[in-house]
Length: 306
Image (cartoon, rainbow, N blue to C red; front, side):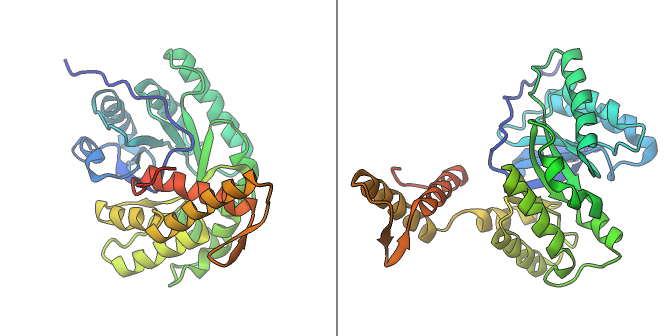
């Protein structure tokens, strides 16, 4: 008999630079998914699984969750949409298996979040899982989802973040992929504003052409510049560049250390505004510097003493 794996309690604010999609129906793919080093994996019960294979995929998912030690890799499950007959059973299997979180596909309003949350809590009670253990994230895939982003991400205390789904969103807007991502800039920006206002994380869509590494890198850099917390990926080759891009540079870390040390010294002296390297700084700079150091620690690139 295989050993039953007990996963640790999920963390809402953990490091999530990459979320790699995997077909939940294919044991050969998901059994070693943790070795690639993605911060999170998304085991997919939705688009990757044919309609007549949903039961088989849930069976595979449950046994993977109960028997595979994914270590520090977070395990999220993308359930089928609420307009299908599958989502309630998807949730029962996710909770019974011990998934860290559930990705709500095609989420368009707060009521959809409430429906999923009620089903999750019922499953937690059914399978003796601590109430509140299973986290939620929302996939925004339509103009309505983007317009309602703030109400969606504030609809549940379980919600840790949201992500835009480029394929469905582009279809709904009648556009194609453009260099520079101009077709999605407004939607990305609106979703980011909603996430930051709500205090949750925000993730960009996957880049579909795995052979176009230059295009992928350009998009990842833009994601980082816009303020995303991470990106969905579909191939292990994409992980390393995302992690490198989203980790603070040594220059940023050194400057953050100067800010933190300087601000503390000035605060002890009763001074609220001071200069570092010739630039005026105050408390908001101090808070961002602390965020950079926390991020550097989480990414494993901090070697200081703060």
